Image (cartoon, rainbow over all chains, first blue to last red; front, side, top):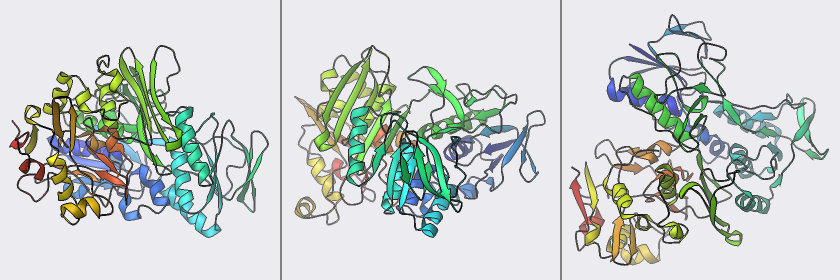
Length: 425
Length: 147
């Protein structure tokens, strides 16, 4: 039996651990097109901002692969699959045969067709090597000004890193606010104000129409409304999409991402997918879609690993959530935090002068989403209420109280939490 | 593994566990200095919840399938192979608060002073019995092998 895993990040590593819980013997091969043994992608902004060293970006110890008897192939891309003969073809021509295959190719940055995007100094911000290239470019060119296209999480983390490096940043965002995917106006407003305070401007309802350069280096961006911003660096961070290049137009079913069942298996037997490249169950929206976040990638990888090793375990689904501290303000958003349709109720506490905002979205007596800005204490309890679809009728009025805790919950549910083992997200 | 069992019917809400926990996790281990003179100010890793006649002390449950372990983006949160406890490597933690977002018990806190990092129960590593259990006057938390 040969296990082969394409991709060496959250899902891939979680799958190795899961397989090894049940199968200590059979061969595991991991294929990665990156040169590093492993690193945490969410940490690249911390690396760029010099808060985390190159040594500390890894999330698994170096002897992990040896301890788990994993054959690690680095710097070599899986370019083709032969589904009939069951092997993976690598960029160097090698063929790696598999009995069970896991595809964890992650996400790829969305790069818009902007005129001038090939000038030096225009970067995506997805991988560690992107961060290293940016670091080098900043150093060589003594960059003092930057434009970040995209006010989502990646764009803001990039912004924060650049600010740490004393670079003046302008954020350009197409939506009417930053972090528009998960934050409403009030939440974004707090962060926008905090950014402004440290000299970082957010331009919303706008985008880059053209990038101009001189001597092959970026010098200026021209926005949709003709406004010009001089800059020495552009980071394009408008989003990521599932990286399905390897399986596109093949027998493996795809939509935006690779389609999987609740056992993380694709439509082809023995071929699994997990993490940012796949579309699995969203337990809140009751649909399958990509949820490109770390804990979901880990969970899916783990479930895939169990099933590959022959221990049938069902994925219970997940939902969108994220946590990040920006400008010293901690923020957490979970689930449907800004629903567009009608039929829900919102509880909120808003104190912009203290940079605090708490929002709870309730639908059919159940919490479907929350936003916490500035005060995130005990946020996980709400995440758990969303996951377990708990009826809040009996304690709704306590949800935003300062002393809200397990004690506010129905006794039965509390006992279940405290005495039982926790079913995971 | 041995776990701290919560017996809310015996808890009086005296919060001695909180005091002892804070001192145990201070640099000086001296009650006055811990409360009055240390920076960053130590915070207790146990929470006492109270409402009317009901109260209980709550700390990390060291879940078998801990969501915090999966959510941690740095690998700072890990399971101690010897004891089974879920521990935090404070050097690796960068304060992204993913663990706070997913902990169903709300027992991981944000230590906002100094290097902003997460703070949670470590079962008083090195002690035979966690200090909160040892100092509970009413056995409202006990340290037992979980059935």
